[in-house]
Amino acid sequence: MKIITADRSDLEEILKVQKKAFYPVSFFYNNPDLGPLHTTLDELNEHFNEYTYLKAVEGNLIIGFLRAKRIDDSCKIESVSVDPEWQKRGIGSQLIKAIEAIFRDVDNYELLTGLKTPGNVTFYSKMNYQIKERIPGTRTIPELVLMQKKSGYKNA
Image (cartoon, rainbow, N blue to C red):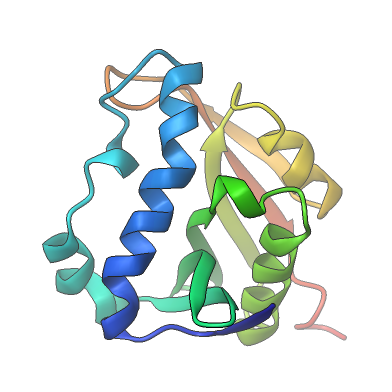
């Protein structure tokens, strides 16, 4: 497995991975309206140039991805997704570490995750992310937490 930069031609497969990863989450929340399940290829294409996309690949198969962008002195990490068949193998951790290395000149890294999504807060906490804020849920979005990690690179 390797982590490499994705390009626009990968977006269709990336979208499939995202939907596979969030499908079980929708059952957990009993909510088929979760936003990531309804993202379209057009939406990804429209905003592609705003983000750095990383993909985890095994052979020619995309098994995970994330996207991130710099906003001021922060790296905003979004859509961390690993195909359920490939989860619990360190792929998400490797994706996070790789994007942190790319955005090493920021003050901190931030991401949103479901507060009650099984294992998410624990996963990010093990990577030294801390809860900074709770965000109330809506019909399409469960209660979220903003998690943040100070950059270990900038002042090193």
